[in-house]
Length: 326
Image (tube, rainbow, N blue to C red; front, side, top):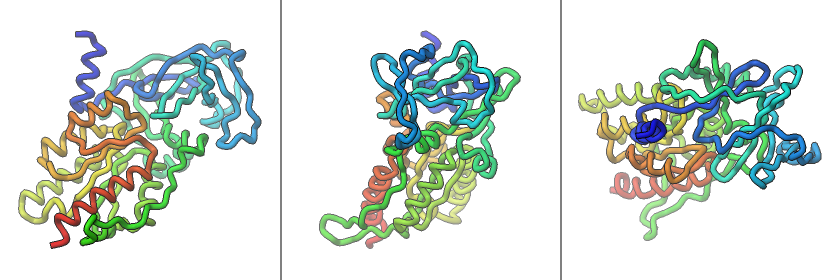
C-alpha cells in the first residue's frame, strides 16, 4: 500500500495526525494544512492583473492560475513583516476554502511534514489578540519553529462575502404549534482554535438567545473536561444532558483534532445521543466520509454561521419536543 494511502486511512480513523506544508517569508517559517493546498506554481508577474486599491475587501491583485483569475494575497502584507530584498524566485500557493480559492505569494516552499497534533503548541488567547488573531500556534519539525496561520481570520479580513456576522431567524415552532424553541435552555459546547470563530459564534448565539455556550480553544482541553464530566456521570452525580446537548467542533486544532475528539466522545465515553457537528474550512467528499466514520451527526463548511445556527435551531426544537415538553 502506498504511503499516501496509509496517511488517508489514518486520518479517516481519527488518529490525530495531519500533513503540514511549510513555507518561508523573510526567513521566517509558516505552515498550512496540506488539505487546503490545491497547487503550487512559480510566480509570474506577466500573469498579474492589478485592481484599484479601493477594491472592497483589500484584494489588489489577481493572478492567472490554470486559466482562472484568482485573488493574490502577498504574505508580506498579510503578516506585516518588515520590508527587505525580494527573493529572485517567489512561489504562489493556491489554497481552497470550500467554494473560495485564494493564492498566497511566499518566498519559498520548504516541504511537507506529517505530524501529530499533540506536537502542535497553541498560542494563548492574549497573544493571539496581539497578533491580530492571524496565528493559532507553532510546531517544531526540524529544529526551528513553524508558525501556523489562522486562514479563517485572513479570509474574513480580505473577502467580505465570508462575513460571519448574522442574525438568527425568528424562533421556530413544531409543525403542530405545540412547542416553540426556547434557545435559553440549550446547552452548547463549542471547540475551535480560531479566536475569531469563537468570538463570532458566541456573539451570534448569545444575541439570538442561546445563553449557555461554553467554548474551548482545542480538542485536548475539551476532552479533559469531558473526561471529568463522564466520571461524574458514571458516579451518578449528574446526567449528560444536564451538561451537554450539542457539540460544535472544528476539525483542524492543536493538541487534539476534531475527528479524534469526536471519535473519543462516541467510543470512549459512549455518548451516542449527543448532537455533534463538525465545522471545517474544507468540506469535500473525502472529509464527509471521515466525519461519518468517527460518528459525527453532521458536518458543514466554515465560516457559514447562518447555516450552523439553522441546524442548531432544527435540532434543539426536536430535542426540546422530546425531552422538555412533557
